[in-house]
Length: 200
Ligand SMILES: [Fe+2]
Image 1 (cartoon, helix red, strand yellow):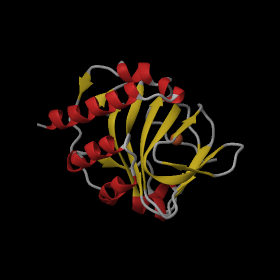
Image 2: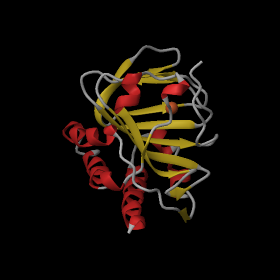
Image 3: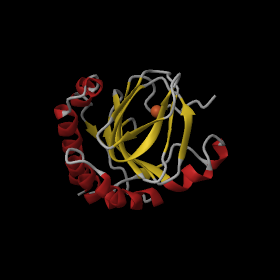
Image 4: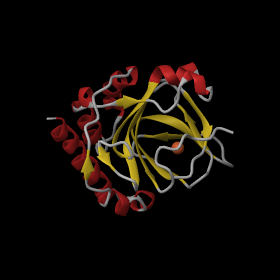
C-alpha cells in the first residue's frame, strides 16, 4: 500500500529530526513533530536524479546513511519532481537534467501540511543552483556528497555530508556541486510552502 511506504519515510525523517543536535535543526523540531494529520496518495514519478541517489550512498556519514538508505529503499515509490522548467529561464539545462526532489511532508502531500515542507533533494555532479530566495525559513542537512554553498554576503564555501546550512527568510542563497553528487534533506517552515523562488 502506498501509505505504508510513505509512512516508513515519515517515521524515518521525524526520528532523524527529533534526534538531531544542531540548534538550527532544533528550530524546526516543533513544526515537524506537529506537521498535521492528513495523507493523500502521491503517485510515483521518476526523474533521472532519482538514479543518482544510490550513487550518493557511499558518500554519506554513519549518521546520515540510514536515512539515505531509507529514501533509496523507497526510491521507486517516490514522486520525483522539479520546481523549475526550461520556460522559467531561471536555472540552466545542467540543473534541469540532473536534479529532483521527493517530498514527504508538504502542501501537496503525501503528508499534507500548511506548516512545514520536507523531503530529499538530489543533485548530480557539476550543477549550479543559482542564488535565489523565498519567504520560508529553510534548513538543509547534507546527507551525502558535497556542494559549495553561498549565503548572501559571503563566499561559496564547501559543505559536506553531515553539515547543516540554515537560511533565514528572504536571504539569498545558492549552491553548486562539483565532482560529487549531493543528497540533501530539506525543511521549510512558514511562508508559502510552494512559493516559486525569486532569482532576481
Ligand atoms: Fe532555498
